[in-house]
Image (cartoon, rainbow, N blue to C red; front, side):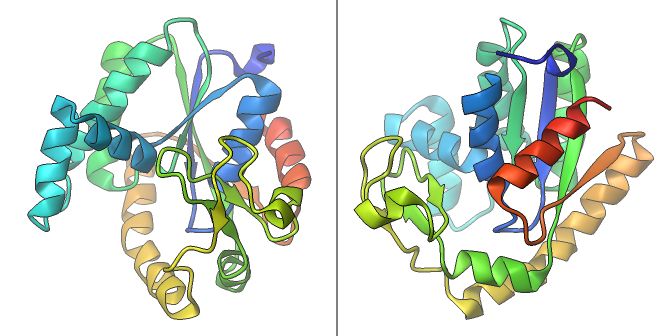
Length: 227
């Protein structure tokens, strides 16, 4: 169930690849009754179902172009409209990702979710820890799931995802070279996004996840809910 202090809140989990945003989000779903949204998973679902959104997104991808920020925000807004009717709190995993997405989302938020709060949680972690995590993690190969598991998770020994029953595998792009390149690009858009939040009066809150277990990070997040 929701804690009273976290009702009607949209959380944006923001942090580098491998900082644990998705894992903490799923913990909140299970233990706090939140809902979570991964824009990557949502876009893939629309593409597989060949919806109007999916056809538009697929067209940009096949043309080798970036999906426009406004389109991504429309997809997220459509999902939020359908999933916030009961006042449930929602975690946006890695969205907004760019300044353009943040600008479009804040407009949507003010127009359509006036009774909700918006909180940005920044996951703080070193590049060294990210490399360690990503080169050792396992993911569900089911495209509609893609749950992430640390190497010590019980499910990894069974090689079966506890959420959907899919097979757990290592991602082909979880190599040191690819991860370092992703980390190199990360500040290029993160700094611009954080500067926009500051100019827009959106307070960003820090969550230090360096060297901590999921349980420790989850307890720290729950402590933030009381502020």
